[in-house]
Length: 271
Image (cartoon, rainbow, N blue to C red):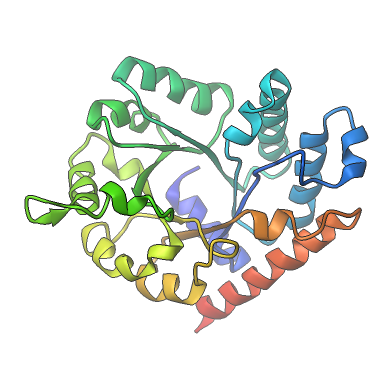
């Protein structure tokens, strides 16, 4: 999917919502555990109930890898279902990969060629040769960790190095890499006050913003400081939507939570 196609969907749906499909078998409705593939059954119902309210889905691969082969098969079924039934949806493999060049190439092939995700998250700590292999894929997007929403972000990312915060140096350096136009960035919603400075460095790039909802991030603040002329934001909510209910009404309740966010986004877009 191209960036222009993503922007078109945002305008059409009046939404820049991304729903995280982080499936924990200890949290899904008990009746689904009788299904042959409870993870996929859960995802399918959530997707069918919410696809018109969001523009992206983001499975965190850890929640699938934890269940071994069956978990990986559920991830494959989920992305195949999305690509088949809702091809207009932007898909994100939240894998946070990052390794030396030849290994990154294999990771990129796994998510872009085999599973056919539109994008994958990566960690930039090992530098350009760990990220550029992902950037080489046409009409695919690499979503690089910029400034994350966890408490440990302050351990390294905001430290001053040669007179400048490390995360700013990472953002600036990434713009020099081959095919950097295929980069998007993760910026946590709990770091909304940093967005103004981030936008000075990467004014045109899309930002994937986790942390709205369960982690306490504020949508209004994120939009105030982070939105650009193309919207430029994908606001992710996971637990706050998919675990709105653990009863048989779980998909409908998830849709209600998604609708609340979409309504707020539509109001922001029309302001």
